[in-house]
Image (cartoon, rainbow, N blue to C red; front, side):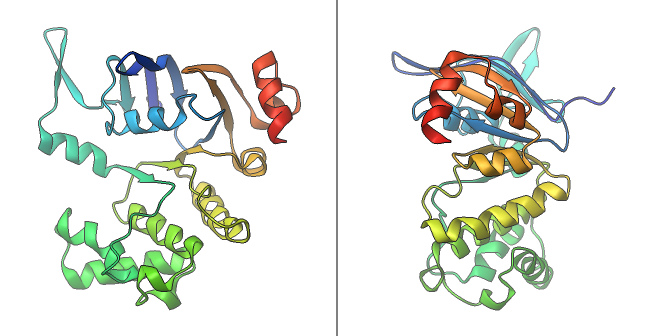
Length: 254
């Protein structure tokens, strides 16, 4: 049997006395698009950041593609991975944030090339070719030589997606990728994500876009107060949630 792409077991994370994740168990199969929804402060973004070890859980284990993230096990005890090995793990997990975090002094093409050259050691000519292909994939071939200030928010987010794809990730994490966009720009980013989902990429998407979750998602996870309250096929959960807390939340956003 092939291991799932993601397996979380009793993942806990606190900031001081505030327990943000209170024992998360989650299994995500290869090629699935999982949409995570819930109120602000429910732990959604923290869970994503734990998946690529941008946040270090206090307890529990996270495996991605069968590999323990952030630690190695010796004699039954977990020890933090050396920085070099942790960086290699992160390279295989792409992440797209609410804000675009592009280098303002580099063009769209140069932003996408950066990781290929600086991290993977790809030759500049090869990196330029690959970056051009990825910008074409997200519909921005004609904006390759524009700087971020010359691009709309939706275009900048598409550059950020292309930059993540340049690292050839096995898993893509999206942390409310359209929440910082003007409403008329949301659709262009969602179209790129739909294309990515159709290609078979495993994706975890924290989102308030319930239409996207219903149309594209394979699995929906509702979180509240650091716990997974309910999960299942998106159409079923959205149409007939079983838990009262899920019903209350969806009544305000649908």
